[in-house]
Length: 289
Image (cartoon, helix red, strand yellow):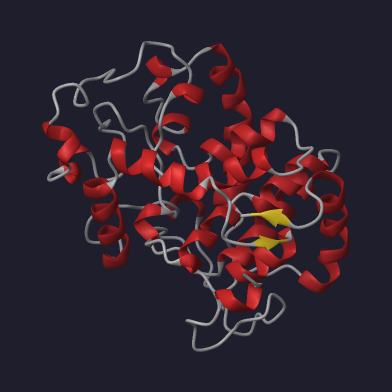
């Protein structure tokens, strides 16, 4: 499948370098991730309601098997980023620009503070590429939003709380509706099945293609949406020492993922050669998706 095929269901294509549609307003830092009822947009609430009711252990396992065949397309990182320029994340109350633009905002925020860590800059650029599943027909509730473990009881730290899971069949399963569920204490997050989404998908894309990024980058990609863990401290009982050591990198990345969302649109024409160099170094060529 070509990159152009991705857009056939769209009325028009927005170039990676055409930013005329995006004019977000300024936002105070403390206003990010405000999920309070009466403030949160209806489409955000609807997205999480579907996720919490439909993401089950069976669903996540089957989706992993389906998507990890990587038989949907071959494309470069830059082609995937251009595809994301037609996508707005419906689960994100702070989404004012496309995910393609957000990628460069995140990368540039990291570059300013960590000029010596080019691997981290590239991680910022690619972290949401897994959302391309939406353009191949996957509903957004199965791709975007905060991630969390399935196979055990949901934590109250999850957005909208445990009550939002009413109707999820896993809650009627005595094994899956306990604190540990199917897991052992301190088993490690690598042995935990997370909700299926863009984090998990890109992690497996990286693992199954030529990728020279360090292990820290894999952790960031795999768990950057796991807010109940890295922001609220939930599910620590499933973590091992490696998870806790890597947590500092996920937290460092998170501030750029979250707080670089702004009306300050980077000059993508100017930045592309620099980031293409990082792509050639760490994640070269066409990737299987």
